[in-house]
Length: 427
Image (cartoon, helix red, strand yellow):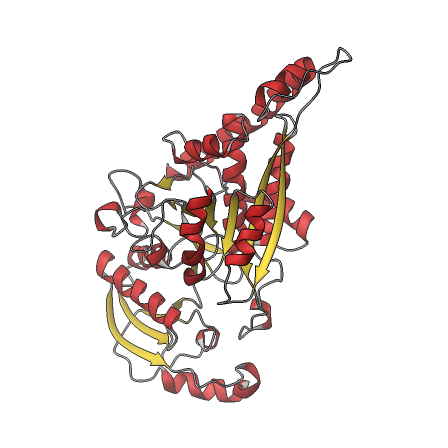
């Protein structure tokens, strides 16, 4: 029943979108000059030759990212150079497809800094060029360093990369919207599936870096929340080796089974290794044969490159045609952020930043993102509600929230920190 309703909703959304564009196109053909004047940010001076002048309102979007080449345990997992940026570029093209009928033009500019570098100058440069909407793919510390400055300048930030819960909780800001899911949302999505499968006894193996520990804490919280039991934990300490070149297949085949030996009886081995030190080596090498989940094995994510449900084939094909590869989670987070801006501009028929912001914050806001249902913001911390995909390297295994995990407002609020738990005080 839920799948059928989601398919109906997706078809209705697609139909409405097509109808909207056709109506706008016909309207533009019949009354182009009058329509352009109505949606323009400021009226043009009256032409002197008896014809009406067309005006285009420009909406500038910036993309501020912290970038450095990254290593991964598998060469297949090395992030593409344009990860995230590519999703935003495709969305800007989508916005302009509709925008040209509304007298709107979306432009896009990317600025890069090094990880952990000061981002203020790059941010100010984008704003000085007229970008009042910034898609941020930054660390939590970098994002917080510009959040208050952005508020003073009337700039909206869309967090498309950082999963840190503190950005939505004690470090929340009223002008920062989050299209990337939190670690707690990812952990809850995974935990719901494990509980649905009746795999309740878990062993947790986590890395020694800060973000590994944060992911492990999210998994502990999920266990408590949904009835899982972590029967043992162990830390894999990063000794600073060269990963692939220093490990070798023979050493890995000997070391991982020994490292996972001696655990109590369990159903699943959870891995928390965001730092990519050991996690990829765990599946199929454990001492006892058990499924692996977390940052390796069955992985929760905001999107999956093999997703084809709810119109997913359409966006995947368009993305692959434009970019030459499949869409990743960060691409989808950036695509969604840029589409939110475009949807606000379309629905308000305006390029006025204040009108767009008011619409995004309003009760009528929603965005379709090929995930089976409309997505809305949690108004207590401006986190985008969204399903969580569970998949391996080949296919989507399931999607959370799982059947039976209910909420009085929306089942999507069973993923992540709910309003009664929030520590966010907007400023």
